[in-house]
Image (cartoon, rainbow, N blue to C red; front, side):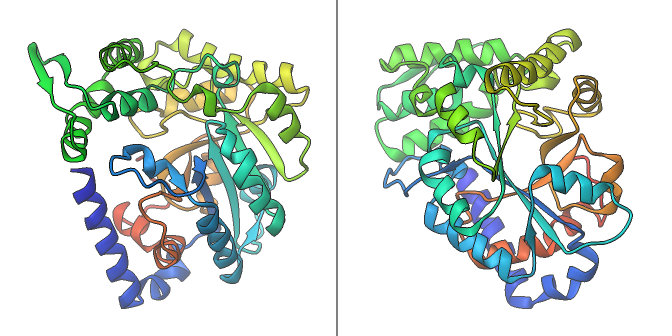
Length: 350
């Protein structure tokens, strides 16, 4: 299902590029610029089953993407400057702010040298529990459980089912069948179910906790004048699924924890998962109440003057691991796909 969806998207983006319509529409669709979203930056994987590969781009692609964005006339800015430009009434050169979610160690090892080479500012949004070594990257544990190759037993929709995982095709089918079910209405349930799958497969539930930056590494990175450390809550929960008190605690404690450990103000946050099902007006207001100055989502889109009234619901342009193609990046920067998807509304809600 996901492979088919991505194939359709690639075909559509390629067709837009070949038609040249993205350039014809760009005067009205490209807006002021964009906030780029990345997660992991590391060498390519040769694994046949790699569902979380959508979160990963190679250092080589990041390097090429930064070069192309510069060649298309954009200026790279930090999130502080992006906020200032959005708040300004006068126009300025088109800009791009680069952000990375979760605090993977590869951001330090592979991405930082690329940003340094191009003198590009970047913002890394960190959940404090990940830096503590206690974070539950359940999506990584879920992948590891399937990749172990053993049958997995799940009571789903009241029926005890067995999912075979011996081959890459079976593994992909199991992922497609269970991922959104696991991402149901209860964050604690999601983690409990994933832990059970990991137990059955004989893999640790915190499969990739070792891949996250420690506090010492974050403290080193925070001294980089190109780097801004932003907040990503404490535990990386879907905030909309929490009651208001618990939601505010996740937001505010994530901010305070970073400030206490790094000794500097934290002004920007990213909402975990970030879709309209995971964050909305309530979460935006709570982020403002907690003292943040911007909040970024995974709503798909570019930045327009109207976003100065929506600083806590900013959209982003994802550098998705499935679309490591400079032609597609050019189409997305032009804004045509987002304009068509959002009915040419500058401020979208999903």
